Length: 189
Image 1 (spheres, one colour):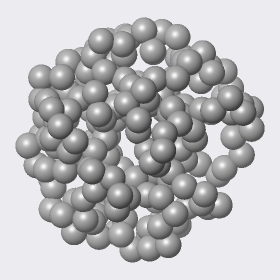
Image 2 (cartoon, one colour):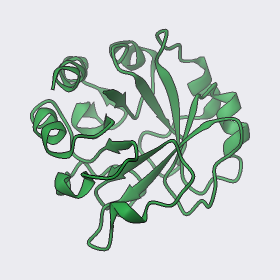
Image 3 (cartoon, one colour):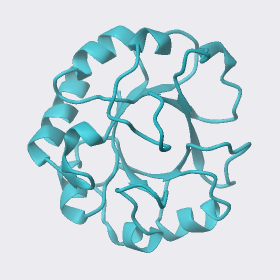
Image 4 (tube, one colour):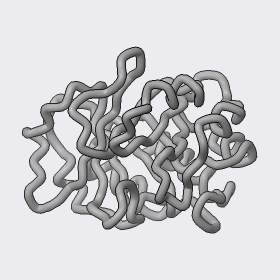
């Protein structure tokens, strides 16, 4: 199970997420969790933890990803392709029109999230049954936390899970106890 803790803005939070398989840095300017690529590049990660960058229609994604020392570029906008040289995860909003069979982007994995006004997480779950099926690697996101992660995994059977806002004390600052509990419950579901 791939477990990703997103919205990392500081070293202490990255350290708290060391048991996860991936941590995410947000490079979308309007986000309250925005971090510059230079600052992200200074945050150390535990061995084996993937460094994922969240981008929205960013023409400089490749350059920024190199500066932040990323492994994965996660695309949340209207991009038609990802930058060369990185693993690509593509995010989709699960609206009424969404169908898992229509995922056509060239990506290693697909992150499914609830729709929101801003790109990225709303902290609200969607019907996890909509994420079932198919042969693709699905990362389930949207309103996940320690209180519902095991039910979400049992329902959707995803390749991975991604959480952010329900693991925070406030936007951009993680609650380390909730982070640890989320990782533990996700990995034992």
